[in-house]
Length: 115
Image (cartoon, rainbow, N blue to C red; front, side, top):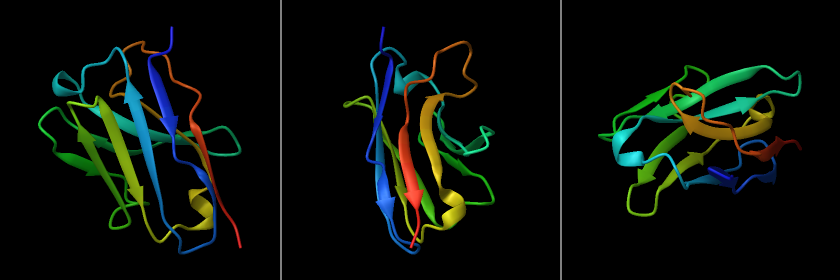
């Protein structure tokens, strides 16, 4: 049963921007902290940003100042606005509850930053 559906990825040049979306069908955003993760080509999973039920964001040092996490509780959607993208931002971006507490990840959306 699909719980999380990510979209908005693509191929972008360094310095470009993308906005990702994640629709949650089971995890209620107004009661949970949600996060964006990225899976690097070598398969490691990194926490990129999270936003708590009240809307307070947290960012990893690698994206601070470049990425903005936000949400729309009415639409059950979490967003990740990414600017000044770098090749090291390449990966599959996934959203989930934080901590995941056993909720399955979705398929994610691929972001590729390349000249």
